[in-house]
Length: 149
Image (cartoon, rainbow, N blue to C red; front, side, top):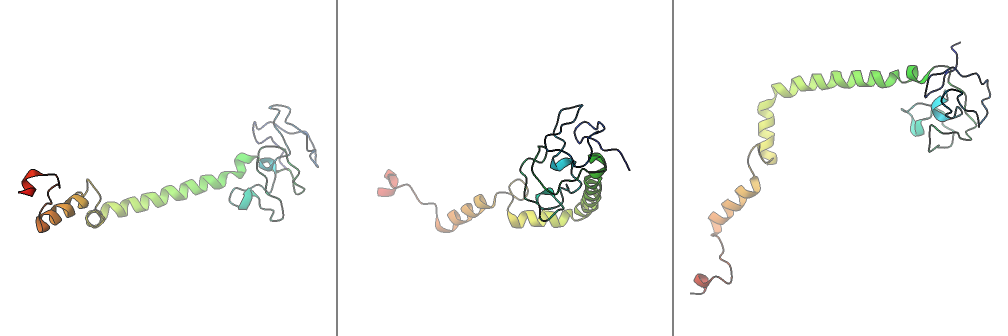
């Protein structure tokens, strides 16, 4: 079984189970009985906890009264490999769709013209205003002396 480690500094923990609520790491003086050191802690779950019956805890890195606490046998860095896998998957998806967007650049230009994005296909509101002015004639201001004559 791997030795227990502090989630902040990685120092070995000499406190045994059950971990007292007021225990602190001898190296960095951070709380040991906190969500981040618990074996149930997982950010992919609701309230970052795999234990469904546990009450929500606001500060995951501070001591709490959770009755389901059990010190995690693996260091937090090893437990956070899920986020590394997630980043790898995200980068693969971005590369895949980046290639797709580059090949569909003609379609993107059509979409810009339909959506009226400025700078891409021109300002559609100014275009529409110009067409309306041409169709109905530009109205003159009410206090214009030429309009009264």
